[in-house]
Length: 138
Image 1 (cartoon, one colour):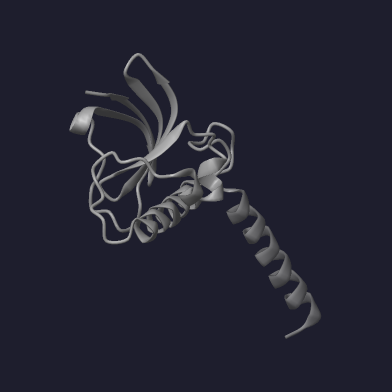
Image 2 (cartoon, rainbow, N blue to C red; image 1 turned 90 degrees about the horizontal axis):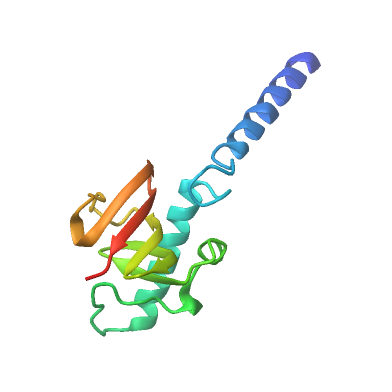
């Protein structure tokens, strides 16, 4: 390969890398700077840690996940609390008058597609595996 081709190819790959690395990190993005894929992976790690720490005990619906199991990216969302919904992770960022709001993070092990109306949830801003939610607690 000639030196000019190596330079052109290397420059192309560098530009492509910078474009890919910058995708999904704007401030208006769900997760405030964290990409949906990053948050989904963090949700899976959080889920796995919780299941491992829970042993063989039954995991009840809406059971809180202890802070010690939260992935770093989940902590970056400054949650008030975190719990599992089916095989997904709910990050409660605001809570008032029986209403929760925050981020709903789908994991790759979940077959559930978030549907407004299910279990009191209303979903908005779907961006792949991440969406904003509002839930009226029963």
